[in-house]
Length: 124
Image (cartoon, rainbow, N blue to C red):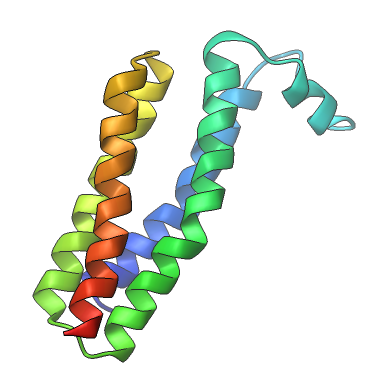
């Protein structure tokens, strides 16, 4: 398995980490998890938003990695872009929790451009 595929696995697990953070409370009600999530505030709400955004971005990243492999793109470049993507998403999450919206957007953009980069190197 390539480094890039391992990065996809990391990103599959990633949203569940933040779901756990959002729900790690004695008041969590597993019988009504969506109602609980809708009532979250503060850092727990932001952790839930990270979870949602991570799920939204996962398919695009996973497809970009798979397409790069199928197109026989340079493996070292695929791996590098995948690693940068994972790091940017981790920093994005930290910025989201810390309420630093401009930095959060910057690191979200780096992740987005990694996906674009994966498609670009696939086309070469």
